[in-house]
Image 1 (cartoon, rainbow, N blue to C red):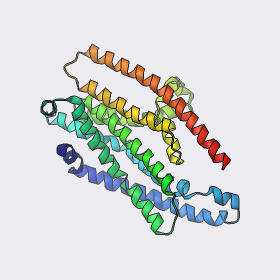
Image 2: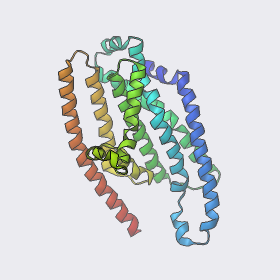
Image 3: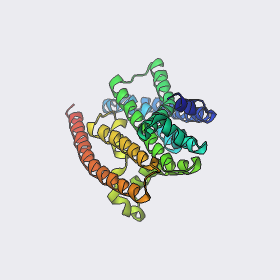
Image 4: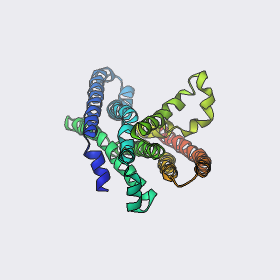
Length: 288
């Protein structure tokens, strides 16, 4: 595991990207605080508006939005590099022989990539602590739910980036494929807004955005948690299939087909469960 951690935290590019993400997250936080301060004076006169003006939505959500934007566009570059670097150095098969198990190697690579993405999320915690130190208020339970969503999102990016690297022969190929998979939720979300993308409607259930929306509102949905965890595990299984160079192309294609069929059925069930959880949470919120 030390080798994987060195690939992540020993690279200058990791810390350069971390500094860039910290600047974006910090800017989002400062802008959110400025807007919050300006709007506070206008809601002071209305008690209803004051109850709806929550620091969680006004401060923490925009801050996490800055991280999510950077993680989606830059995170795959770091995450895919952990495995793709082994292929560039022609040490991938040697590592497989040393560990004796492709799933074990890929799990280590994905874990190291996940930790690297969590490093990029550290400024969120720093900004939250700065808000509390300045006299602001944040509910601990709600904040933990929001941060859980960040961790699950980072885990999904790490898993799909590892899968992209497993199916690629070099770092540029892995980076391009990982970026495509990472921004695919944006494309699927846009399918409902543009007629030209209407043909993507049947696969909209594969987008992670609806499952992350609840975490942004501090709503813990077991169905959404299960969907994101299973999506990450499915990506790791896909990576294991891609790493099997000893399999024929037809066998690998058949395995991917079966995996996609199982993922589609699980996605439908988990989406239904998440929808029920969301309705129940909304009912409890209205009851309050």
